[in-house]
Image 1: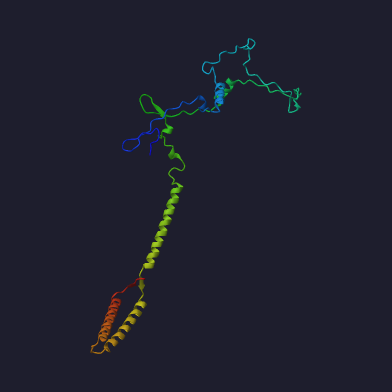
Image 2: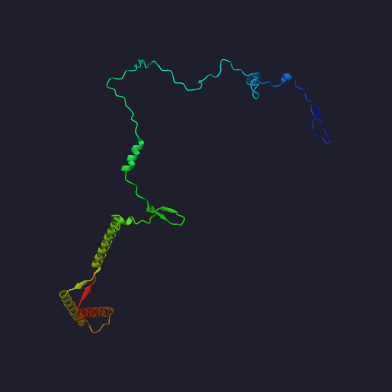
Length: 259
């Protein structure tokens, strides 16, 4: 295959890099020109200020007729309206015959003050307390050295809230004590009267006699397990009855616990 024009070939059959192409100059007609170029140029010329930093080239000279006149800067009242809301203002009327103008009477303040001082109550002297030899003093009443609080009517009286609190505490203690007494009464042992003690003794002795008769009726030969167990049970009941009868007869007062 023949090599392409403009391309090089090496001896080993490989093709080398192509040589650079010459640059072609572009004409001015081929360059990109924005369609807003004229508009932007016009806006830039329009907003441009030639005296932006130096000020205007010419300053208007004030006219000689516009000089500062006298009292021109003083505030002036608005001109009075002849008609207001379509109504004419009433004309100034002449005062009537019964009108009496208020006459200001000049008071003699010196005499008034003198009478007030003569008739007034003299001020009480204020007590001071001097606490240094240089004459440093302060009012005695607000210092706390005057015993004025002990002269109050309610001095030494127990406040109401303290009395109310003590009453509540006492009531709570009474309720607690009543509950404790009630619990103790419930748990207290019952005293056995003489009649009940006698009847219980008679019943125990009668039961003992029945068990003793049953024990004597038992066979002499206990060759079986049942006979041995029955004899041991009867003996145990007899011992328990004898213990109870002895305890009732020994003690004078008997108490029974409530279960």
